[in-house]
Amino acid sequence: MKRVFENYRIEIGLFLSSIILRAGFLLIAALRLQQPYQGFFTADGYYEIAMNLVSHDAYTITFQSPFILDTLRPPGLPYLIAVLFQLSGSMALFHVLQLIAASCIPVLAFWLAQRIGLTRKYAFMVALVILVDPLGIVLSLKVISETFFTALFLTGVLALCSFLKDGHMGNSGHAYALYAGGALGVATLFRPSVLYLAPALAVIWFAARYLQHKSLRAGSIALFLLCFYIFVSPWMIRNFRAYGAFAYSSIRQQVLYGALAPSVYAFAFHESYREGQQRLFAEDGLSEYPIISLGNAPYFNRRASQTIAAHPLAFAGVAAINTATFFTHDGVFDFLGLIGVTGQYMHLERGTFLAAQVLAHPTQVIGVIFSPYLFIGLVRFWWVIVALLFLAQIFFIFRKQTVSAQIFLFILIVLYFALTTIANGFAVNARFRFPVNALLVSLAMLSVQRLGRHFKRAAH
Image (cartoon, rainbow, N blue to C red):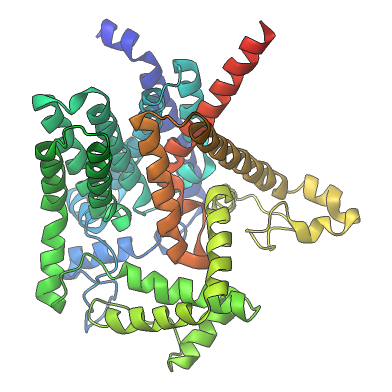
């Protein structure tokens, strides 16, 4: 036991610190909110589906008959909540398990950072950033899928790094491939973000190995994909039986129609995102946000595609704004609401960098400095720096024209999340970046480490 503590004292310290920090904020939220499951704690309908599973054995977000089978949300979180609720009779066991999962994320970040060449000092700095991230704290308290998904997803990435480093030979390669496929498969049960990542990585692997005239290691990749789809395919079979569509989720059609198409309208007609939604819904005779299932998904997919195709320049503008927001959004607003901090400027647009509306009036600058907006601006500025350092890392790679497989994997995954998030249009926020924060900050810190070594050599 003493040797374990000595070898893993940093990891143990990170884990315990995260538990204490998040448990403290959970207590604050529980004391502040009189009805936590009718407001702050719940999001995206997972809690409601879980309660319907407990009460009616129905996978639906509606609380009265006729129950509409939900095809938007994957099964991982609702079934986990339902099982834990039936075991304990409350949500307490779920929150304990989620705090544990959340506290594994800084530890995984520490290990992953070292896989791309960061020293333990810099890797520890990466882990600290992930540990104190305000959005990460909020997501670890809410009944939402990000925390479990991120812990499982990063576990899969860690296994992939081991495979790339020294495990693609022999039995160890098969084991790492199974671990990676299994972790990513289970992660997809909580959030469908990586549904296309696993096959994409397999294709890129085959292409890279072929061009390098190296063994394809097809056996290991086959095991990776097999293990991934073992977890994913049962839900696809369920959807096929219910709707005749062999698909995992209708979330893609939901965001294309409900988020991206309205964003394109908003950009094209110089109106707000909400007005863009109302314009689109009015064209289709809808008075409110439609329920999109796999049964009607083809229609909404076609309508969204028509809208986007009709305004290609507007789509390009939305994509550019979305990508910039993906890398720089702070996610602090919910954190301030959690601890009850408000201010006279909190009504302003959260996406406005450094509250430009207020800064346009010099007499109000002092008020902004002493408002919560200062903290939002500082965190936003931090993510801008991280994004610039990430771009610097890509520049280093192009200049040297060489990169390790692990660094390439990190960059590829970050870009995958950035590109797939474009489908959310102006609805993007820091939640979409959260699963890859550890990878993004690690790459940024690698730029800092390289710059530090450069200046150190120059000084000598």
